[in-house]
Length: 632
Image 1 (tube, rainbow, N blue to C red):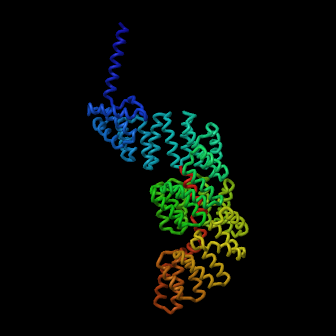
Image 2 (tube, rainbow, N blue to C red):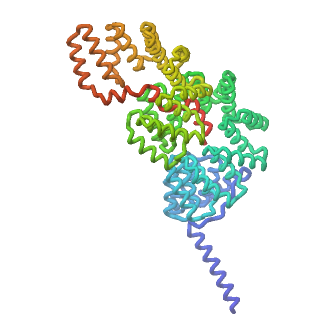
Image 3 (cartoon, rainbow, N blue to C red):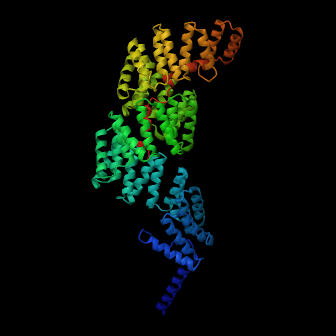
């Protein structure tokens, strides 16, 4: 009797489960896995089912699943809308609709459907994962992390959530959190190749080259032909400045038939560094011939242009890249850097603002923004930014350089030198060495400053800021001939944007050669008509030689535009009008001068020579190099 009762109870319980399974739309169902071999027949079967019964919601759902697998997104959406209309509270249907919209790159619509699915079934883990991917696409990285974290709170063993969490944290440059996610994933799946590769990429992105090298060697010991690791090791060798090893990796990838455009970019840069400029350009031209929209190849050409001083061409190439991909923050950042180098601050500020609007997290963007504020004398804001950035990465070399520059601006040279020397113990970068040379110059330690600038020019012979600093140092050491020769070589180059003309003219004026200086300055203004440092020097020279009519023309034109020398130009123009006996113009200009004249603002604008108003002492080609070599 007991056995019969138990059998009847089991039968009733089984029927109850079957009924609930048919009536509850959100219980997981086992769906047939799709592949290339079965998908076409699967789609035909679902079409037949739907043809027999147009209200068969499950057939409509399955048909949409097959269409999505085939990439027929519009037809998949049409079938799925039928299913959702018939069962609007079915989380599985809503989730698949979100996937179809995601595949159609309608990310906001996909997120809307997934959020609706969560309202129906808040414990459906895959929806949190999909939401994370959707938010990633619209650059809402914070929301993406929250969604993935919610999935992991519900299932601490959710491997896919850990993987995507690590990826997105890399994009946020939150490397510690990214590494933590990967480590958790590897505890669950120690042999997960995707996680091992991601761990390697995190080390490279962090600049932790030693652990990256060790890990790459270990992974290649497991699989000597692991192409992704070989490619990552190639990037690593390039960043470590190990050209021979990098070339070996390129040969290995070529032998395997796996040489990609990004590998050829690095190959071109290696050739350029070895002096094979023409061959490097040819490699990049071939890439652009095959794919004119290859943004990284355009950036490679921009870097090669900078190496030979073709700043205008580099700017045009970056702007061409922006026409192709106008949502990339790093391209706006590069454009801003190039415009600032050309002293086009208005357009540079606009480009920097756009970069920060698209992505305000990267440290280089925030540092460049802080340097602009430093140039404008907003010292308190710069201090606040530095304190905030210290929380992200207190040992960052470029942040330490910015701190030193702030100390220099405040006249605290001893503290700036101490900070730079501490940083140099950790990593002797170009920017740190340059900053230290500058501090030594300001402390009047000219011989020591000269030793640093000589080393800098060995590394980057055409780095104008180093040339300028060395020339100024030579002048202080009464080595005028050497300073003149060094400066004259840059009269025909773009790097100085006219400041080489100013430097050469100043040297000639020191020697009493006013006429020769004026010729140099006029040639400079023909190329750089808005270079106010040239106008300032030329107007001063005209006053010395009593060429008042010539001074009147250039000063009146200069005052039509904003410049840091407005007070100086008004003062000189008043002197010119008095010498020309134009009393009306003299009195009008004198009143303007008196209204504008502010000794504090004049001191701020004139006490800092152009060299020390530079945004970054780092060579611009290195900024472009790291933009695409380190970009994930």
